[in-house]
Length: 314
Length: 147
Image 1 (cartoon, rainbow over the protein chains, first blue to last red):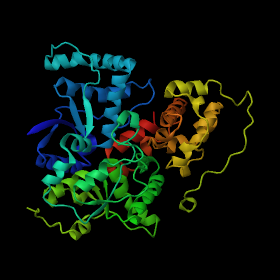
Image 2 (image 1 turned 90 degrees about the horizontal axis):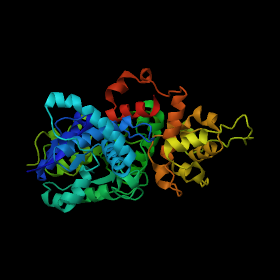
Image 3 (image 1 turned 90 degrees about the vertical axis):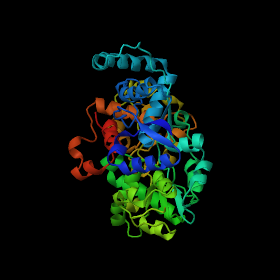
Image 4 (image 1 turned 120 degrees about the horizontal axis):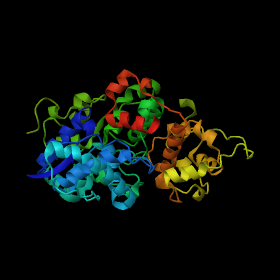
């Protein structure tokens, strides 16, 4: 089975472990394995903008350099923040010579200690952006192909109306990310269709859910999420699909605060794309971590006849 | 605040520019930190109309751009806009002049923090929130809003 370097990031390692597990379950059934890096650190979640803050580039660069040094050229991430940070760091190392030199000067400074521990005598080689950072969904679309997913389905999600939610950092800034059109993307829509479900069009799919404002200004995030969720619901969605742990947190857990603030609000279940994928590929219901969700997802799955008891569909 | 959902902040009074209130090096500093050209902005207002958080702001993004052009640092540094911006890049994507407005906001936050204005400290987060928000949210908020 093909093994592909995989950077889970801190959220998937702990608080969003259900995203990690469903991704691993699903990819094994699709014929490849997510091979977690031996050592990794936090990527820093947000890339720095000004040149002066070169320090914030060091952690993601070290992760990327370790992947290059292990002889691999593709790195898969799932968390949108990690994806954005790693990909943009790689972009600035690749496109800007000054950044590349600065970052490598720091990285080279790191190595003596490592030499002492690991007796590494190999020659120093500057990291120049050789690794290609890709999102798991991008891998499914471009390398594996959505047709292959449709062929491998054990259980079509036919009858389910799903609203894709992109959020902000998965698509933007588009000149550096280049995953899809920043204003009119289709990567999640096509994914949902490949699973046999129907994708719902609504205007708020690329609007921000408030991101880290859920910590500093929770009320602002509540208002944004209310708009997104209600718009999806009014356009006929049974559920929303996301790929980012923070979008998930905002859209799912925040529904408690939204229900208190808005009397007309009806809860909408939220899925990670990997959960829908692994349900459709026949992974047991009990392995999906649905108990971590604030809004119960079982009524929606029950309705299309997916056994939400303990057993799987096999 | 839910009753005025969708409303833009009120129009502010005209400013009389004098030597005393114009911060001459401010625009230059923002240009250097963000790598953008503030003078490229021609005030079309696309950033403000697309901003999902515009209704939470006291100064709209397009107005922030104009105030930087005019060297009006105090209003921006002491205002709420730079701290409510969630860095979602909507403005950056839509700017017809190709200005990375999110980078400008980041530069402004950096300038504010250099002057000792931290927006959100570790003591301001509730323990329940700290125990439940996914880590990108925690790391992100402190990287963006605190020194």
